[in-house]
Image 1: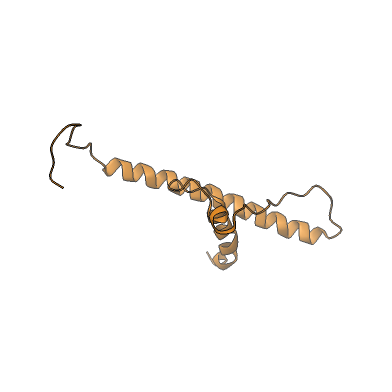
Image 2 (image 1 turned 45 degrees about the vertical axis):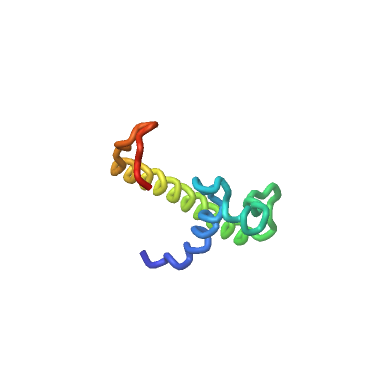
Length: 96
C-alpha cells in the first residue's frame, strides 16, 4: 500500500474519537474537554471538489474506526483465550 501517509490523519482522528475500554472516555474528551464536531453537512456547497474531498476523509475516518473496533474485538478474544481461571477461591490464604 503506497498511500498510507494520507490515511494517517483520519486514522488518528478515529483513534482519538474512539472510547477507551479502560477509561470510558475518548482521548479528545480527556485532552480537550469535548468531542470535535462530526463531518455532517446540511447544505450544498458551491465547490463540489471540497465536498468530495471532505466525503473521502469522512469515509476514511469511518473505515478506520471500524478497523479499530474490529482489532479491539480480535485482541480481546485472543487475550481472553490465553487466560486461565484463577486457582484461588474466595477465602483462600495467599502470600503477598
